Image (tube, rainbow, N blue to C red):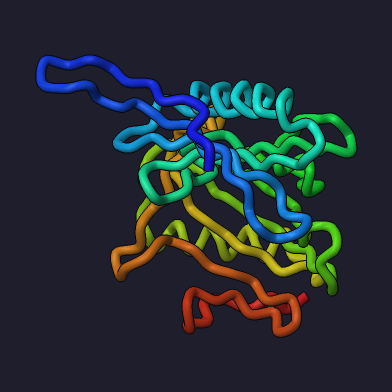
Length: 219
C-alpha cells in the first residue's frame, strides 16, 4: 500500500488529520488497484468528497494507466454509503476512461414525483462476467421530513405493486432529505431495529420485511 497524500489541519492541541489517500494493490490476478480516500472522523459535503475522489483517481491513473483502479471514500474503517458521497469511481484501463461505478455497471436511473415523497429508481444488474446474470430494482422513497413508520411501509408496498412487472426483484428503502440533493438523504430507522426496508420476490410475489410478509403482488 502506498500513501499518496495526507492533509492535516493544525490546531491548538495537535495537528488533526483531515483525510488520507492510499493506493493498494490486491494480489489477485485481474483485480483492480484500490484507491482509498479515508476521512478519520467526519465527511465533508458529498459534492466535495465526490470531486476530491474523482480528481485523486485521475491523478493516480496518470501514473498507473495500464491497470484498472477502483476509487472509494471511507469514514474510518467503514465505506461511505451512497448517500454520503455521490458515487464510487473507476478508471478502466482498456478505455483510458474515468467513470462512475454506476455508469460502468450499466445502472439505469429514473424518478417519479408524488405529492408526499419522491421516488428514485435504479435498475441494476450483476457485474459483467458474473453468471448467471441477475437484474433488480432499488427503489428509494425520499420524504422531506420523517414519515410515520406505518405510512412509510404502506407507501412502499403500494409503489412496489404499481411498479412490479414480474420480471425483477425489488429492494425498497425510505429516506429523508431533499429530492434535488442525493447527498442529503438519510436512511430512516425502524422502531423495531434496523431500517425501514422491504423486498419484493418476483418468484413468489411476496413483499417481505425480514421474515414478515407485509404484502403480495397478485398481477
